[in-house]
Image 1 (cartoon, rainbow, N blue to C red):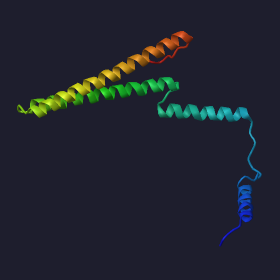
Image 2 (spheres, rainbow, N blue to C red; image 1 turned 180 degrees about the vertical axis):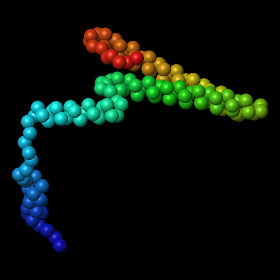
Image 3 (cartoon, rainbow, N blue to C red; image 1 turned 135 degrees about the vertical axis):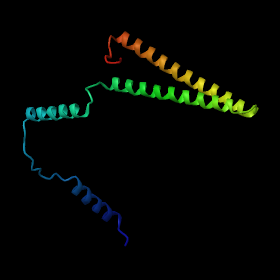
Image 4 (tube, one colour; image 1 turned 90 degrees about the vertical axis):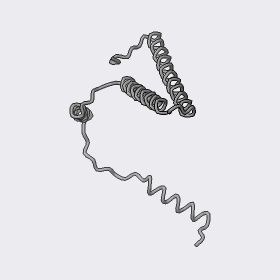
Length: 140
């Protein structure tokens, strides 16, 4: 069944009209003040039940960064222990010793890059906040 161009346009227009037609909405009207109070009550109940606090997004991001840096520290320690174990069990095999040295070097370089990035970011944000007079509290 082949439809003509005009028929396709007509069917598309009718379908779009049905999709965007304004139907009456039968909803109870409420005053804005009571709704705002109810939402605030529900918000407070959720916050107290979840154990979360009212924190700014910047503080939450700082906490996430702290956790990620902690995980990177754990990964660094695991890599160093793995490379040390590989070196100790190499039994004089130069290939295993070389691989262990490379793992130690790569892990140390990776940790140095991560720490340098964190220090630079902290310095830049601190200077920007100092220049604008803004402050972020809660970063303990």
